[in-house]
Image 1 (cartoon, one colour):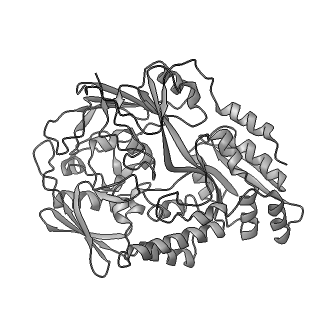
Image 2 (image 1 turned 90 degrees about the horizontal axis):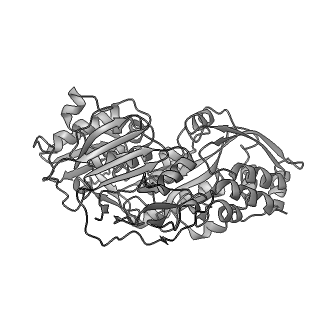
Image 3 (image 1 turned 90 degrees about the vertical axis):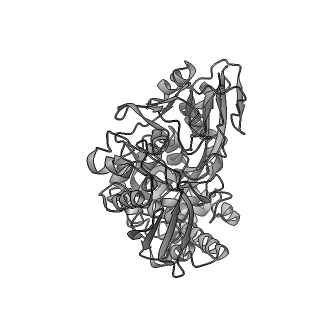
Length: 517
């Protein structure tokens, strides 16, 4: 039987001491009704700072978005909280009858600071750069686009290698961030900015801090940019991050569920819980024996006690059994019971696979940013089912890279949903996180789920089919969908779980935040 001692110990490691307080915690959002101070400065912190301002060279799309680039650059599309894609710079979009062309009609009221329009020519320059520049992730995400043609003053047409409805979701990410062509041709996008957004940079210390200032009064989105200056600071140490929030050095920040108790309810602070499409998963190398046997992979899934782990280490979050979350395309409630905790069944499956005495998976990479204590709990839970692992801690860049090269049997790491279940599949099942590659069955189901010539109902049915295939074949061992507590000054308003991207990629479009007087 599973021993709760390990969970209690792990929970104690994850938590930071509770401070005496008198404040508020809520899940609906921060709706401060005070008079907005349009000359205010907002200081915000996050664990990771960006080293380049170039959206097309982002090493982490989430980090680049959250660390201020979305306030500098407008993007072609956005993703609503319900998971649907919507236009931002795009006013309307449509597919050709054969599904091989995507036509984008642009807004006609967007300009840069020098008065030049953000038109079809500008978008072509940016998309051609995004799809051809050798980059960590953007180029591969743009691979379905074979050509971009200006078909009207404010219209571009994308030629697609095959019918797919994922490109609007991709262009809601860094690929769709639009720079002034002069910056691309004559400037250095890594250290300079020139976008159509309401903000430009005041200062930038790579990996440490970015300060942006509102410097235009003619921005097309009149409800946005209510804050004069925003400071983004990287604070990687959990205790330092907590101290910065408690001491007022930062006024907005995301906490892990196990660490928020240190500031939750403190006077002058508000906590907003946001269920996200970011989770934790044990990525499995299906190339490596014995994980090349589906019964062994299924055994690992039965060896998890997800509910107890979530309760102890991710309070308020949801146990994760599949690859799309509640309310989003591809989700199937029937899959929630696919792998209930059953160590005896795990042992039987191992025996059926020819391992009656259990298995030794050898080295399992644990990325150092995962909540402390999770690896210890998994090691003990797996032992109850006859599964031995040797945890090896690596950082957030080295770990996935090493796993992608096939240097370990498994990787415990964050697992983002992406802007959608299908659009995110190229990343989730790409070579960096899936050294075993994909199968013809996977490719066909993904093609069916993203074919814009099919009805929405047909695509949804295929998305569910794909999700079911991944779960039944146990390509991974999902653990948790994280509900992140965001802590902020009670002067911060308009922060809500309903902000764009909240249930999918997890960074939030903070363009409508306000600070009261």
